[in-house]
Structures are given as structure tokens and as C-alpha cells.
Length: 358
Image (tube, rainbow, N blue to C red; front, side):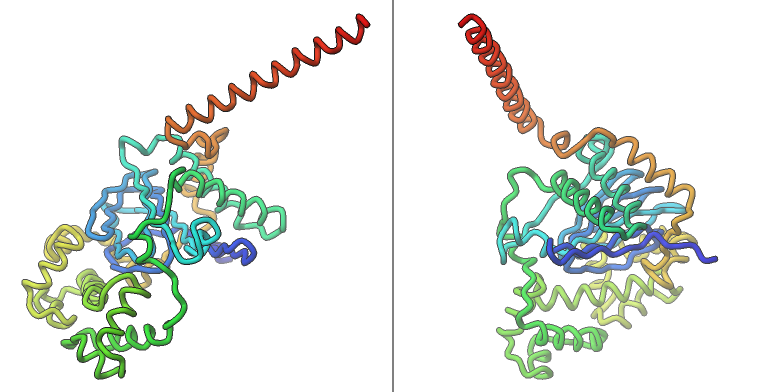
């Protein structure tokens, strides 16, 4: 009998919840971007994460949060690298931060921070959510939703407010057909030279409207989108074939090897040749079906890791993950409340004595 994969979706329209949760084996770079928040935790091995031009080396138990429409790619360093991922539709936040303004979050751990309480809370919630995904009864679904809220209370800073950067990730359904038409043309023709004027002539939209659509609906401009498509296809071929790098550059729309090297270095922090030298057989094995090499539910290592997360985070909650200044304020409130309860007890005792004496 085929093993069940650790890959689930969870939806609750009443709470604006739409999630995808899975465990997979990390291979080579596949540059991509999407409209969800993506929370990634390394369960095994070491992973290089490139996101919006920044480069992070994530060790076991480290995590990173990727904002909607941020270009990103992962590379497994060595063999047998495994990660757990949670995708969250940003519409979840609209009831808290406004109908139109979505937030941009910052979250990444390293050797100096991975053992902080907030990260233990997040890992524990993710592990419990993965276990609960196996069940579909109402009580389990209710508990699953509660765990997500607990997780997000540890992720979102207590003073988080929408900012101008967050506006770039707005999910605006108007103009969807126009954007789909523009994107489809670029996806089909990215190997050729395409200018904004070319796109306008082919689609019938004027150049200023096209620019507004890309910036307003995708959060990036036309030239950045075109570059991302070219980089995504070129990096996939770099790991899947032994073709010359100059030929790959030419085949995917880059003017020359120099421009390909410059774009690759700016995005990933290394040249295409340096990247190719880092690839292992383990990386290449996952390329045929990227993010489709999901880990099965009977994987002993992953099962033990999830159990360890649940045990390590026991007794911790969102209060534990608050900054120290906030914890001190909360503790002071608890002390005031305790003093009030003690004062009330003394008053009740005094009133009781007075009644007895009378």
C-alpha cells in the first residue's frame, strides 16, 4: 500500500483561512514567487535560502518567513535536506489590518536566536497542526484553527501595523483578466526580446496602464517580472542539463553571458558556474518534479522530529514569545490583578468578621 504523503490543505471560509501544509525534500534552485505568506522550517540538513536578494544559511530547526510576491529559491547543502512549509493566504489578515492593507512580516532565525521561546512555539504549533491534519472531525478542525492563531501571535510583532511596503502585496481581484493576459504573453515569449511597447502592441493596452497593472496587482514592475521568468527557467536548466552556460543564457532571453551572470549574482549571490559546482546528485534528483517529492507520513526521522518539537514547546504559549519589555508589562498587570484579588479576599474576610461580631 502506498504511503500517505505529509501534504494537506485546510480551509475555513468563515475565518478567511486557506492553508497548504507539507513536508518535502529540498533540491536545487527553482526561482519562484507567489501571493501567499510562506513559513519554512528546516527539519533536516542545511539549506541556502535566497529571498529578494538576501541570502540566508538555515540549519536544522531554523526558519524563515517569505512575504507575498517575494522572489525566492532554496538550495539543499549536502544530502538529505528536508523542510516543512506552511502557506497562508494573506486574506487571513484583512480582518485585523484592514480590507486593503496587508502587512509585511520579518522573521528569520539563526544560531543565536533559534532557541528563543517564540521559535519553539512556532515549531510546536506547526508540528501539532501537521498531526491534526490527519483527522477531519470538527473538534480537530477547531483545534487546528486555534493552533494557527497561536502560531500567528508568535509570528506577528505586538506593535505590527501596515506599512507602505505592505501595500505592494495587495490582493486586488480587479483587473485579474488583464494581468493574466499580460503574464501569459510573457511566459510564452520570454525567450525573445520584449519591451513595454511590444507588450502594449500585442495586448492592446497602453504602456502606462500595463505599468500600473504590474505594480498594483503583482507588486513588481514589468521588467522585474520578465527577469524573474527568465531566471526561473535558466536556473532550472542549469541543474537539469550539462549545456554551456552561455547557451543557456541565450536560450532564455538574456542578451549575453555578462547580463546573465550579473542578474544571477544579484539574485543568488554567486555566478551560474559557482552555483552549478554546488549541485549534488541529491539536488538533481528532485528537479524533475520540484516540490512534488513530499515526505511520507511513515518517515521515522520526520515523525521523531515532529514529536520532539511538540515535547520541546510544551507549556509555552504566545506570552512566552513576546519581547521582554512586553513580558514585563504583562507580568506587572498579573501582579496588579493578584494584588486586587488579595485585597478583595481581605475585604471579604473583614466583612465576614463584622457580620459575626454584630
